[in-house]
Length: 252
Image (cartoon, rainbow, N blue to C red):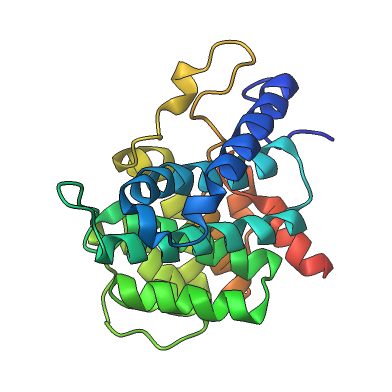
């Protein structure tokens, strides 16, 4: 298996997948099913496992696993997101949990990420329906999420103008303008994604031991290319563009 991300060693990716898989399975009893009898433990394990499951998805792609394998990871994150919102509605005394809503940038970005990977690799119809439900609970689809999920948006503007305004043009503009906007977005992606706490994680990597680095990928660019049938020739020069997601879709 050839890693798609060679910024770190093959051994690093092996270790990352082992660590993340073990963590996801350890916390699964609380994070993948609401446990009313122990809300406090559920909150702790669910918040931790949300990151674990997202990171595992990214690590598998970075390590070179077939893109089709990511469908199960998407479903896992969707389940955890649903469980998160259940715990948020039943927060333990003195231990509140806020629901994941698009008023905050990170949950919106996570929704873009999941919707994009799902669009590229294909997920079961029920998972798509559940994704639409968590997007609705988060505040509703803007034109970008609407394009990725194939649903009508509830608003005309993008949820967060910075740094996502170019995605709006990529989602609704005529093809030439959309492709130019997506190129601008990908070219500035590393700088623009800095609001996510894991963005500088590569700097923390020492040797083959897993840190929080799971690869840097502009998933949303691939999702919009597939959703709209855009020409991604110019995007393929970017180290952040997950071209294999698009290629895998075209091979199906």
